[in-house]
Image (tube, rainbow, N blue to C red):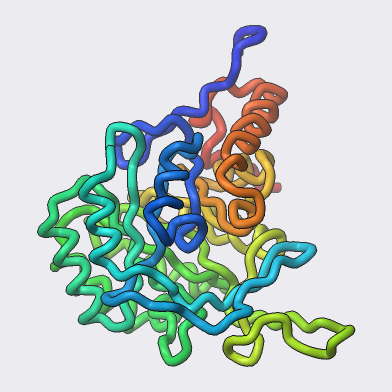
Length: 315
């Protein structure tokens, strides 16, 4: 890299150019139009809506989120304004400024197919991210942990949508799970991207002083984010990058610094989503992360992301 030159963070996603690889994670700073507008005005390279259901949901009872020394625990329960709200937003979004993803998490296959059909008929340039991994709705199992159900689910959506789409997966913890999930994902040509990972579901945080859980829903069980999940997120990103060479990987989980962004990119991610840290710091975090990423790249002599993306070394 020439002396005093600033590294270039520009990248592309499914042939669409982005100023940088950073965006929010579905569920954070994206429930209302005003929050989405704040992301548009921020320096994020892209944005994604709240995971939407067929109808509006209030979500689980409060308290349902707690910041922790090493991240967060939450059991939000998919509070959202209903898919029509986000479809209306997507219809008015300025796609020349930055890409928009619409996250879909219907409570049944039929609900998802209804939402997917509406998004298909709208013929918008938004990217569909199908959430197969919300751990916080009572009575709604995660399709990503039932491989037969996931295969049937994807077969229906791939046929109905016909355009490129992606999935947000739960964390996997065994090589046989990586292998089985990848085999299923690779069956669908229009499944174009994979987001790894959603929160690590059903953790339990106990307050010693009160001898109580710290969130109310599900007897205190909730999804973990932040530092707790970074190694698991990186493992999933790299596992699917290796196993799904025809798919684009979006990294999500544990990103609080520019070094964490670098690690996700090095593991094979093309874009990197921010969750817990965005919730705590707000959209200005994208400025800080880009500054830290550029500093690290300059120190290492990299002038652009493609010089190191996916080039993780092993011993």
